Image 1 (cartoon, rainbow, N blue to C red):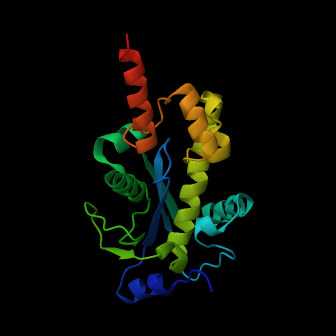
Image 2: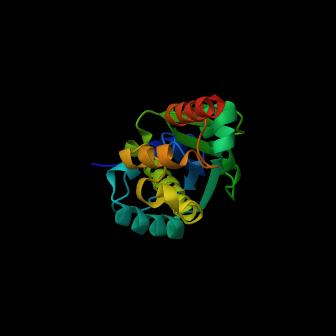
Length: 211
């Protein structure tokens, strides 16, 4: 059936008016930012085809991204860098990106629906929903905005570091990416605490130490 407004309507019945859906993209890759989006949709918003971004093709995501940006009351985007991910771990960096996205909303939200993350440090009630991107329309919309935004960021990094072909794999640990990582070593945007990258750094250090 796809995502609905059930959770948003339930929040409105409790008196809340600006309900933001929040989701992220990029927790798994070996390189690049983790990106979060927060989306407040108008009441009874019809966005045909909106679903969990992982269930959509790139062209469908691009089309729906444009529709969401056009129809939403407001959209906020936040991210955490590879350096921040290495410093605080990927879960805490994801929460940081989510708080930044919520902070970019204008007007601000008064209630947050979030995909399966318990989020503290925000000034409004937060409701985590397991598989929220498949159930809540605003979370699904946020998942699309986050994914498209991150993919476009990785396309820019592809221009800076073409030897890794980020345009193809977006930083995920594909066979091609691992082969290029082995050939060229980590770039400045690689996450050094992620196992394949840290293993590569360890190998490089050992080779450098050999007489």
